[in-house]
Length: 296
View 1 (tube, rainbow, N blue to C red):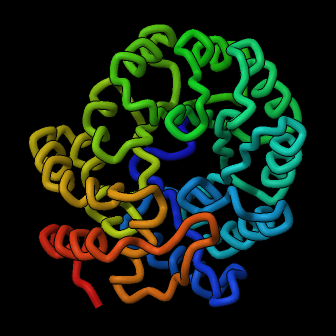
View 2 (cartoon, helix red, strand yellow):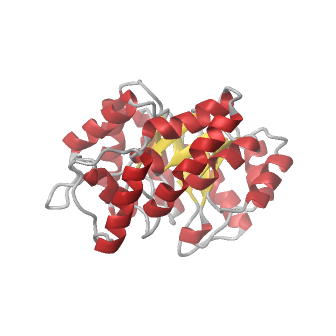
C-alpha cells in the first residue's frame, strides 16, 4: 500500500524575523492543509529550505510536524543529504520519531555514479525503519537516478518503495514504469506534469502548487482516480499559468511570497535566497487572482 495517494504538499518552513523557525505558524500551516484536502505533508524538502537548516533544526521540524499532524494525514520527512552518513542519521531519527515515510534526494554537488546511488540508498534503507521514496531532480542536484537503478532498488530493497520524479523527462518516467512493471509508488515532482504521470500509473504528486491551492491540487488527482479524466485535465491546464509564476524564480522564493500574499505570516527566506523581484511578484499576484485565489 502506498504511503499516500493524491496531493502531498512540499510544505514551506515559516521563519521569525530573526530567521529562526516559527513553529506556531508551522502548526497553522499543517492545520490549513489537513482542513483543505491535502493528502500528505512533506516536511523539510527543497521547498522547506532544508538545505539551510542545521541537523538539530531539521529533526525538530520533522518531530513537531508529526505532532502537529496528529495522524490526520501521513507525514513524509525529507532526510536526504550529499553525505551518506548524514542521510542515514536523519533517516533513522525521523523514522524513530514516527514519520510515515522518508523522501531521500540524490546526493548533490559531489553527485554519485549509479553504483554509488545504489550503495547510498541501500545504506539508508538498512538503518531507517520506514518506507523510502527516492527523489530524482537532476536540475538541482546534478545527479539523475537512471530507470534501471530505480528498478533495481525497488525490486531488491523492501523498504524502498517509490520515486518522486522531477526530471521532467516523461520518457524516463515511462521507462521506470516499464522496468518495474508498474510495481512502484510513482509521484510527480513537477506540478505541470501531474496528469501525464498519473496516466503512466502514478500515485500522485509532491507539490509546490499545493501550498497555495491545496483543494485544487487534491482534485486534479481525485478526479483522475475517479475516472473524470477530462475534469482532471481541465484543472491541470487551468493551473499552468499559476505554476509558471510559482517557478518564475528559484523555488521556494515565489511560493513563499505567494503564501504571504494570502495573508499568512511565514517570514522571509534564508540566504542565499533573496526576496522576489517586484515585477515577478506582481505577475505572481495576477496569476493567483486569475486562478481564483483570494489575496489579503
